[in-house]
Image (cartoon, rainbow, N blue to C red; front, side, top):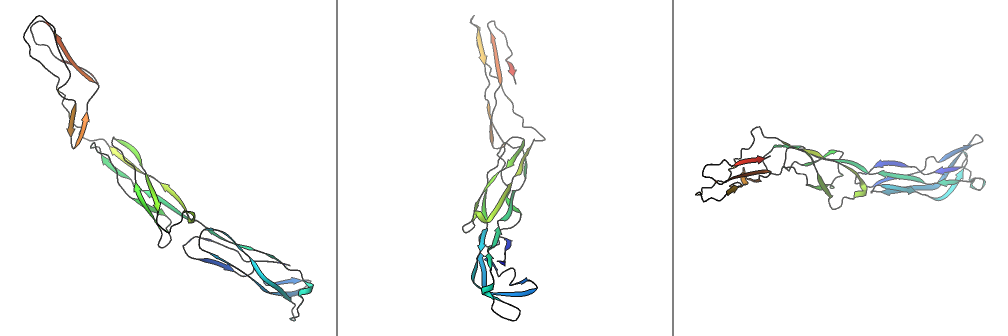
Length: 231
């Protein structure tokens, strides 16, 4: 007859988990019930993993009348298993929305969206996502497990929220002033070009304008408009 140790499957919870005993301590053969004693099986562990539950001891077989019939019996033993699965956790960063103001948009927080850490365990978080221009970017983050929290005991999934920067209802107004000049006629061609400034501070941010040109040229006495071209 074959006797197998009990098995158990559970999920990591930070506590020691155990299993003991045999699946059965009796067997029937040719209509006669026999009892097995002298064997035991046990295993205990806290961390996620698969552990063998060994059967130890020397089997003693008795019949229904209590007679020792061990010599007439062949008992095989099989170990059981204690399986502790990693605890599933989902970490998710929150969404952040802001109107465009020229500043980098960051922030929000990281939450445990599904599952939970075992008592006394957890993680620290650093948000790394950012966005300046209108549009959408992932609110990225990284996490570090706290001391005493083992990575092998958890199956951690990360989900990123969104950073949304929306366009301003009232666009910033920037006035570019082309360069000008006053000279006396001397028979030579005179040229003026460029802008008085191409960098501006608006609402705490500095902007640089490019893609435009401004120029005017003339020889004869008169007033010449400075033409601005480009986008």
